Length: 163
Image 1 (cartoon, rainbow, N blue to C red):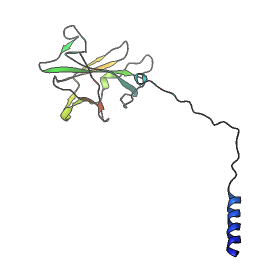
Image 2: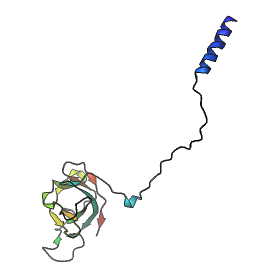
Image 3: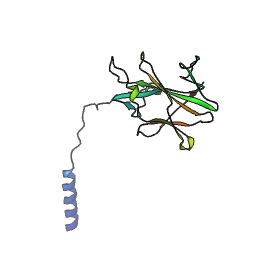
Image 4: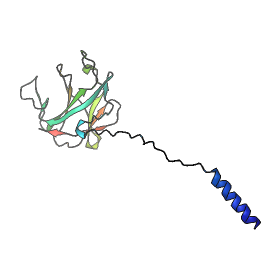
């Protein structure tokens, strides 16, 4: 009996020590969800040229540089026999108004093919009107998989359009 009174007293003390849960009339604060369509999202791979962040706007494999060019040299460069030219176009995201992109100060820019073959860019074109920069890599016509190596960044997989 002595133990049952002690046990009952312990239970009463523990129950009394429990915090009271009072009902509240406050509605919880909800956090709005923002959805960005995949085609509007900006991939940031960390490509920076003298403080200006660049996005990859287009990657095209064709017979000439720049892709879609129909003129003669020097305006259009034709790929050699057994080769294609991979054109990668960059768009500056935060270039201050009135400034030019420092396109002459490119870091080591290479395209990496399957088998880890690395090819440096051989052509470049800067568009003063829209500030886009396109670089060209002459690659074997048989190449199918491409990655971009910009300076010391990790390799960036490229999704390629063909012409």
